[in-house]
Length: 400
Ligand code: SF4
Image (cartoon, rainbow, N blue to C red; front, side, top):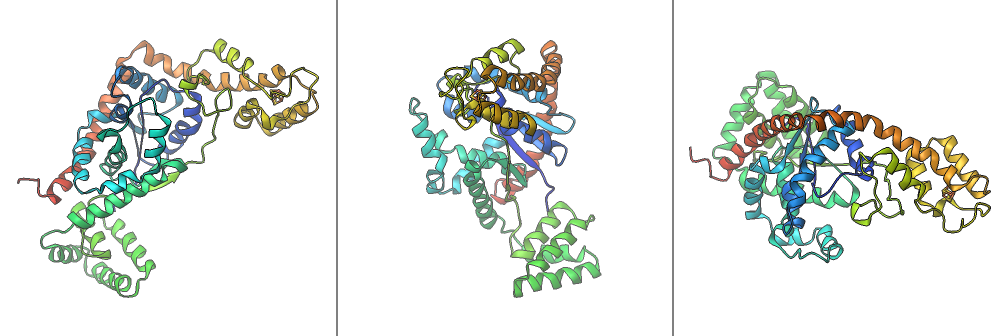
């Protein structure tokens, strides 16, 4: 089997805010120490909605990379790169498009939603329809096993899986596959080869899933096999196809959602966001002036945290005793709203302090970020080329 790997990207369409941090970046930071991770700036994806004004993309790309590093993404653990610097993404997108039914793209739920939500833009374009397919190429090209997503993105991962399955079925037919697979079985050594054949029979004749799992574990341990033989043997276990693309799993993120200052989704375009590296005075001002429960007109009026966006901030930032203090104080008019907001201000400022410090070195010397990304681009491209070699060969485009 191919090694476990995580792939995820973000579109550079504006500066990053605390909603992005709590919704996605914190999760990336956690994952980078658990599995090999590739995090990319999805600049081509940004063009699908910003094709008429791409000026924001280049600036946001570098700002976003500094935000990632400031938040705690560690380039010694994760690979950071820019999508368009690995042109094989486009090649795989094109090749996958040849065999992807139009209906698969049209039925992706976010397609219609986005067209309705962004009604000020003309999104009746070829690029926008193909957006989920480009996403599939972004993931499949690294044979990623896991993709961190929110609930709304699960249908995209399902489609990626269907695309990988269809590709393997169509193009995994290798000339002389059976013979090559049997040769590879022999390379396991006589004891393991015997076990492999027994487990394969148990799975194929009796449908025993445990036999399949045991055989896969054995192949994982068989260090002497080449990558090609290993994939043949994985494919041979289940049928007669080579596995060229890997079906990724959705890794659902239990991210805490930080709403905007007005309680709606945090978004720069709604004017309700706090930037990831917002300065302290501005954070204080924004929180002090953010709306509260409309029923609390005077200090003596009782309120209800359930109707107040500040409470949602407390749910992300405050410990249980503070939350209890808020609920009691609000419902009894024992505390004022400015008093209630102070722990939130303190927590945000504390959270941002190390981010400002980490960002400073990259702001002082932008060549550091350029160097990190250049290394990441090279590393990502190397992995992408490994997959593309197999894809080109399978589709008859190797010309050797
Ligand atoms: S006391 Fe706190 S929770 Fe209650 S309305 Fe004021 S800011 Fe909101």
